[in-house]
Amino acid sequence: MSDSLNADFSRPAAMDTAKMDWQASPSPTVWRKRLDLVDGEFSRVTSVVRYDADSAFHEHGHPQGEEILVLDGTFSDEHGDYPAGTFLLNPSGFRHAPFSKDGCIIFVKLCQFAGDDREHVVVDTAHAEWQGAAPGVEILPLYRDARYPEDISMIRLAAGTLLPTGYIDAEAAAKGFETFVVSGELRSGDSRYGAGAWLRAPRSTGHSFVATADTTFYMKRNHLAA
Image 1 (tube, one colour):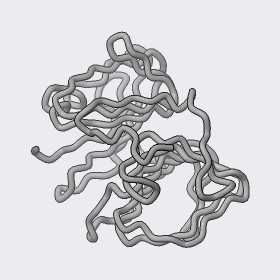
Image 2: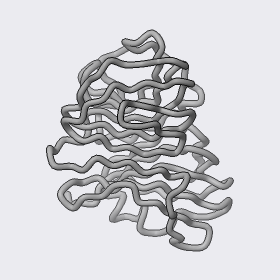
Image 3: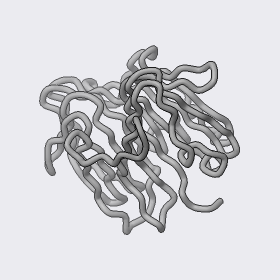
């Protein structure tokens, strides 16, 4: 595979992981579908990763942080077990030896969270208290720190509901956003994004989304001024 993928962040990118084949990783029991990649194996990358049953990695660190959303199964390390729906932000300097006893699938971002004073975050979205933002709309904030640009949340839309103004309005779009559909389907214009779809929009790209079915998705925006 090429040493870069969707590495020009001034251009929009979209990939349907449901239609992609699993690719080998350095571990024979761990597989991946890369979504963006900058400068090779041990650099910035966004992927969907599958651990086979009884998979394990040796202990390692994350010098520029790691973000994980568990999509299926249970992801584990020496710090705990994280079932489907768990969100983790492992800050710069965090070390662990991940494994999965029964197998799991995760959405993971590496080398994108520099900063030595970030907090370690664990959110069980399946049991957390979601916020009703509007009819048919629930939001669960996952991570925000005024010192850093990320504004990360999970959003639920009932079928037929338009994503509220303020999430992908002109101001938010001017700062860029990224989304991953966990379940259901979003429509934007003539494009449809089902479960497993990933979309990254650069600055100055406007979108509006409506759910064609009950839909849950991840959303990351930049909340700092350009």
